[in-house]
Picture 1 (cartoon, helix red, strand yellow):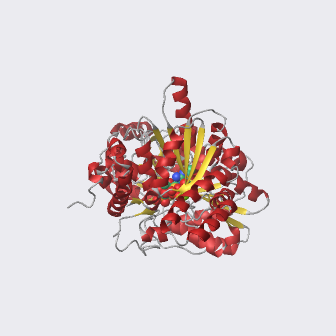
Picture 2 (picture 1 turned 45 degrees about the vertical axis):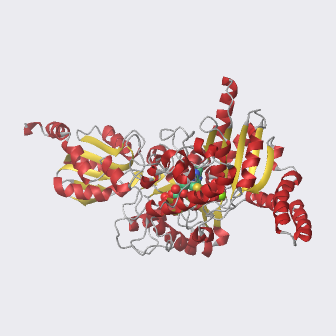
Picture 3 (picture 1 turned 180 degrees about the vertical axis):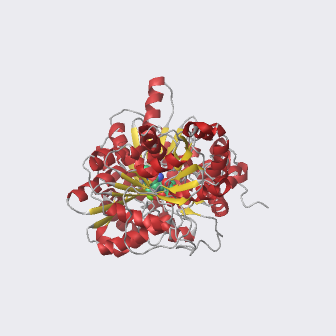
Length: 630
Ligand SMILES: Cc1ncc(C[n+]2csc(CCOP(=O)(O)OP(=O)(O)O)c2C)c(N)n1
Ligand SMILES: CC(=O)[C@@H](O)[C@H](O)COP(=O)(O)O
Ligand SMILES: [Mg+2]
């Protein structure tokens, strides 16, 4: 006996369109139950997906997908979309290597019209598609579905600004659940809340309630009428001022509202804007109660839920950072902690509770976050910007132009450096060492363990210039931590193992596999610590004593730490050969972090294999260094 009798009949959206509208609530209920069951087995994003079930059903029921385009924003809320578009079986391997991606991906399905993972791109892409249809003379609808959090990013407004005058047939659906990953922030959130609780809306509702208390069915009618009235009476909104036809807000869980409204909007010309109200975690009580905890989940038992807080095992690098931030804030009143909407993910929850006046969540606004930090630094404060490596890509020009060029003391606490695993190529912090090393004035540190991470954060904080401390997602090797706020000698690495012939120059997370590999090939191992300024003396000394140097970094092999080693060897015209190991020049798929690292040779076996695959490198160098050795 199946739990999903109606869902079992759906393998593509055409079958959703064949359903009678009155069947859709049952489909939504079954879909929601399936998502809780499936995600509890695989882990992934949950509360956002539970909040978009009805909206997804309605969109695929009303629009002729994939001819009509659905463009999702961030894309973490598209599991219902994936199930309805033929990937229900694939959900069993969600975010696993070779399995379904956790985000829309063009190569995965024709229904995934645009690859996403970073927020606030949907309106831009949808406008592009709408204009393309116009230029090509094709008739199709294009719908962008964007959350209230994603709406807070600059690119969303850049796109609205353009869409409002672009004379393109497109629909923006704002999925407003009054939540980002962290609690909502910003003036836009307050504005949207006003729209929902607008005085006109309240007056109509109060009047309605007075006359309808005696008749439930009339009350139900009034509820719908109230939504309609609200949509009509709400004064001209920000979005209308930008040239979009604003409708809403309507209940994003009420298919009786959603379907007719979308059907009406489908036939309107020009840029349309539908504001729907949903609940993050809808339909699963534990997620409704704590949508932040259930935003991204590991495997759990639905009947029990997930236990919050750290598991008590080794502290993650994120926790090391969060503890250091509180300790340094206690020692220095100038410290200001900043996050672009990733309070929990970046480890700032405790800091935000203990130092609320010095804590700033600027929303999903990385560009603003970087320059905001620069402004604080100009006035003598000490900003610490906690930001995922991949999301710093959004604020790169601001780092160069507003921070480094002015040599301002901003600390970039770069979390998720290297491969992140299940989130895949949109989220791997694969490029930071490359895009940072070429920037003058930057100091770049890569801790190899928890204690070094803390010391490097202190070193960064005490510099009178910009610094980045880059650490991976997850835990370190588990060393004892010195709680004193002491730093390191700038630009100095250390020898961790003495061997012969080959020297492994390890950066950050690669020290552990390098030490393991060195045991097998009796290599020297250096813990380089600094990408910039690189320890030139150490490299020269190693080059004088070894015929082959091997740089190992969990970052793009092009540029980055290896290029700094190469530059030193070239300057001294060393005969020592250099082999550079890192993330190869292609995007790395999603999957288990350890498996992914092994797949690209950034594990002990891979390091050994890379060296043994190039015997000539060492032999050449030996010969050049000591011709008599022939
Ligand atoms: C550029 C960028 N910054 C940060 C993130 C991390 N992130 C993922 S989901 C999310 C919150 C999105 O909020 P909203 O758009 O309201 O979607 P909801 O989760 O509420 O459905 C954030 C900040 C991201 N994906 N992209
Ligand atoms: C969708 C999104 O961008 C975030 O939810 C991200 O997946 C968080 O990553 P972590 O799980 O590494 O915090
Ligand atoms: Mg939201």
